Every structure is written in C-alpha cells, then in structure tokens.
Image (cartoon, rainbow, N blue to C red):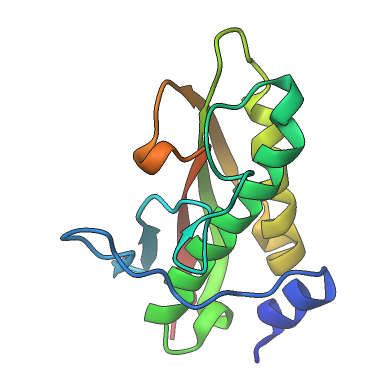
Length: 158
C-alpha cells in the first residue's frame, strides 16, 4: 500500500476495487503523461449507493450527495490506480476535477457537493491534490445517479 492509499485510510476512506465499464470504453486511460478517468458514478457492490446515489439533489439531500460524490471519487481513483504500475503513488498531481450533480430546479449548491470530492483528493495527495474544478448541475445522469465524477491526473515522470 502506497502513501496516497495510506493517507486515504487515515482519513477514513478505503479504495474500492476498480469499476468495470458499463459499455465499450475504458474506466481510465493514460496518454502523454496524463490519466483521464471516465465519468464515475457512486457505485458500491455492483449498484448505486442507496439512497445517497440515486435521484435528484436538493438542499435536503445535500449530505447524501456529498456522500455519493465521495464514493464516485474513490471509484475514479481506483480506476486510475488500476492502470498505473505504481498505483496512486504514480500520480504527480490532480489537475482537474469535474463533478456533475443531477439537480432539482433551483438547487444551486453544486459547489458544496463538489467540495466533498475536493476534500478527499486533498486528503490523498496533500498540496498535489489541489486542482482546478467545475461543478455542474444537470437534468439527468446515467442510471438515475445523483452525481458523476471525472478526474484528470498528471503522472510522475520516470
């Protein structure tokens, strides 16, 4: 277990098994020193977390959405780790985080949902976990998911 995984564990997080693709795509791809993750949902044990990972987010479901986005971020990190020979220790820094939130009308706190993912990345990578970010409200997500996460990571040079 590398340093990033130890940091995650000390913060109370466990890296899950890498997610299986739900179609003809790769969960993560390394190209020109960057790892791109496909959009990851809050899947756990083969299905969406319930009730946190399903449905639209509003002010009353903010805590649920933050929990779901943590799971989706862990899934994205697991996908990235699975293609790097050094696992998460092969990551130089987190470059960009994009969080999509299936939002009820008039919900405008997508950034508060995204903060939970940002906090997790900072816990795993310290200052190298600081990133640029987009938090986007959308009408629908696959499988009626409440959130979806994409991460762009820079890989350490060898």
